Length: 184
Image (cartoon, rainbow, N blue to C red; front, side, top):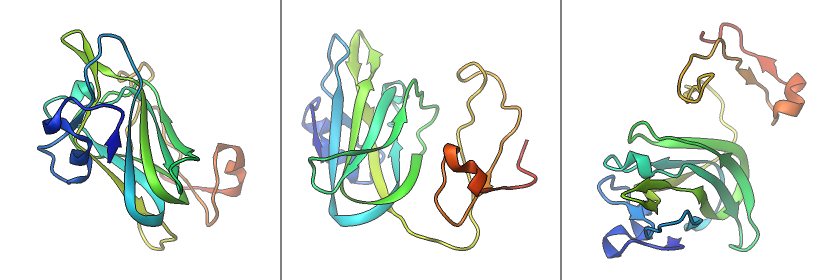
């Protein structure tokens, strides 16, 4: 793992891949908001379809606020797989972003908005992991963060869940089947 900056040896980027929630990477504190990033090199190229990050339990407010997750096969050309704005970590559990399976050797977190404490901006994160993707048959459990109608306030009125044997997105939703009896 390599990072744009580190707060020091105790907070180095290698902590992001050790699987230990008691260790974390922290960017160098800055008085002005500055972009930060960390790149993880996988052991070998693999087809991945999910990236998860775990906040540091002691510094939830320093989890990245606005960021992109990107993948690359060569460390030069990057593909954005998730873009997040105004995120707020509520607890120190794994938080994941799924996407279409694609070949990757590198995973990059590019942070455009950081948390702030004691008048300094930081990114502080416990772990990052990527999941090998592929076609799976059987059952699955779905979990998601449900936004309110006013940021973290409010309640969703309904959920719509769709499935298909081929990839689809919002533009090709007609090619998918809606699940009946989705939770309220």
